[in-house]
Amino acid sequence: MDGNWPKKYSSRKELKILAAAFAENNELYSEKAEKFLVEVDRLKSHGKFSDDQILLYAYQRVLTCEVSDKKSH
Image (tube, rainbow, N blue to C red; front, side):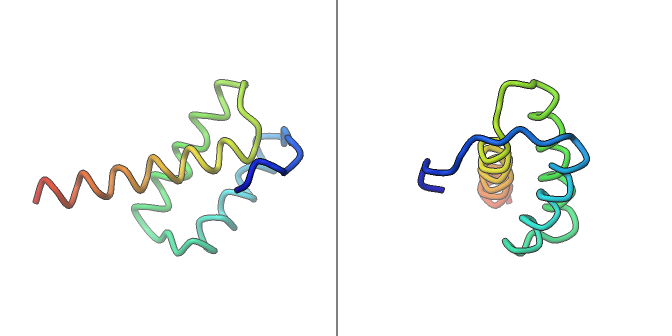
């Protein structure tokens, strides 16, 4: 995301549909996809982030958790 997207604030339902498509496009499956969708929901509940920010922050969070999980093994 290059920051040139218009800020969009979708409904919770619309954002979940976008998030599911985003997860599929980025090959997040099973547990990672669940964590991503939970994080999207958590960020949406704050009410201060646009859709692109929510998707990006949630995706970064899942990737960060993945890296820390690999380090702990």
